[in-house]
Amino acid sequence: MGFLYGKYVERTNSMLSIEKAKHLLKEQNIRLTPQRLELMNILSQENKHWTVDEIYKLLNEKMPSVSITTVYNNIHLFAELNLVKEIQFGEGLSKYEWKKSDHYHIVCSECQEIVDIWYPTLKEVEVFAKSISKFNITSHNLQFYGICEHCQSE
Image (tube, rainbow, N blue to C red):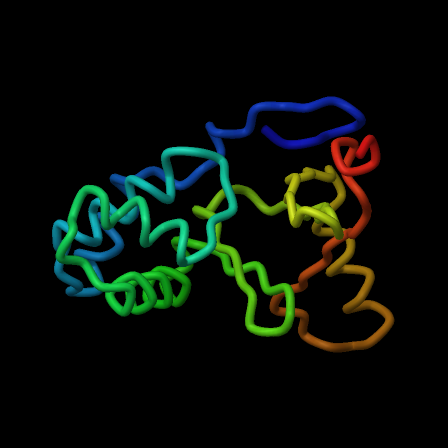
């Protein structure tokens, strides 16, 4: 679920398919190991923002011989290939999400819940930044922070 104009919307149809991800790995001559395939299944199964520990626990239930190093290495590989996006929170904390259409995040400062938001003029931010700076903008990152409804009620 994501947030658009004050309403929650389902955006799973904009997610990268596993078939496209497999094709990309093959194009790059990267073996599609059972661990990589299961990792892709975990990451793409929900519209969720995962820590490496959460991914490791799920993967380890299905493949007990998998090490946390394998998870880290493959997550970093997937990030390099643009299959997942890393969301950094400082102090070494990162969460990862399966690739989907460009969007922003709202992060709860209390419980760290992340909500996706889609804004129709997202690309205009880069165009504006380029026009005032004369930089060749290659990417940007914008996150909003606040306190979620659940934490406000506690």
